[in-house]
Image 1 (spheres, rainbow, N blue to C red):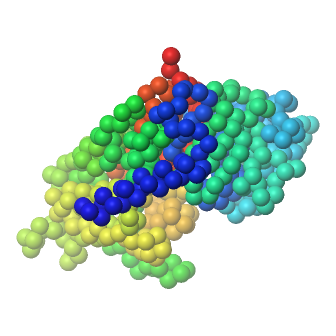
Image 2 (cartoon, rainbow, N blue to C red):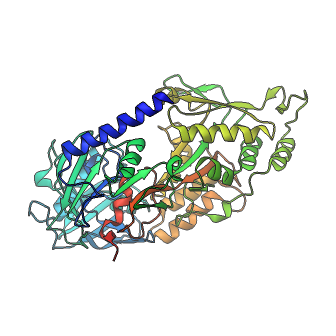
Image 3 (cartoon, helix red, strand yellow):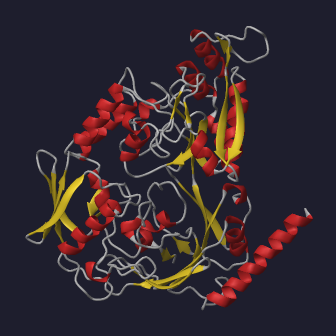
Length: 530
């Protein structure tokens, strides 16, 4: 207890010093409502603010504009684009642009800036996957993308990629961005704060706040700053959600920021090119995976670990337009899990409470990133629930380096959640077996691959959605728990923010994985209440 008190005192002292040294405005508790906000809501991006390097993939790029964007209902609407057309064969995408947009340095935004942005992003080797783009060129003031093969999800590259100016893109751009978005970067003190101001040349709906100061604080420090009245808005973990803060209220945003268990899908015996083991003889049995899915009480995880701030998860895309709601299963049923195991040939022949099959005990390891208290709690609770059905799960925290060498032969508790259905392909396509952190268990199903191929080849979003849903469950098979169950999805974690009582943050849409920056997507709606 003495160490904890000392740590909290140090946190408070560091906040006071930070604000005194870096913030040019009075405390939130003392100043009147004006056109400035101080917030602790965004994790500092190590790589800076360059969209060609991945900035803005999980939320508004803030300083840049995109060709398309999503509205409150996640529908695709125009931003820089006035309209777009897809050829009948799905290989060409033509985007027409507004002619009234200027970058923050006063130079006009043209089709050549869009061409340059996508060419640079494709060559960057970053998280932006443009490998299917054959070329991009300007044609009569429009931008024409030519693909190697049809890809319905290319639409989301147009939503997520902020446009940079060809004339002002350099090695310094990530720390000195010039864009056509609603804000300008004025000051970045690495490890401490980011100060932005409203862009007077912005063409869209302008926020009423002329200045935002983002403080880069850890969760304990952000909560302490909120209690001290130093910030107008702060992201907090669920552990602090029951503590009231004078002058502030809690908002809980629905998300697809999920946590789930990836099972090794194949039997042991193979190794990766690096020599890492692949497969697990226990989890390769479908009755084990299905039994774990059925015995988990997801609502109990939400209530007990997330303090009620979350929802049960049954896929990586719950609630999104391409989710198949038929995949929701009845869970928390250890007796049904026992029946599934018995039907699969598993029984407790030696009476030790753990079922076995052909001399193989139903036990395996569940790994999670060490230091992540939420994932640790979820893993331990899942192990307790699975034990009721006769499955023993050994929970172990590992560094990410250790996880990389062990994740193909052991179950791993991951976190995902994107506004791009291509994530479903990344997680479940057989060709992605062992690719980075995606299909770590080497899952593969020809029928699922076929449905997802049809989804990618579709020329309309509506057609693609029907195929994504069938890949999850088509009545006979799929990658959901009703089908092959290569994952046991656990919870969707609500993003929690303490907000000043007189600050209205509008109606944010379902948030993706990662807290902080996505909440600024609707910043033009933020306002003081009457």
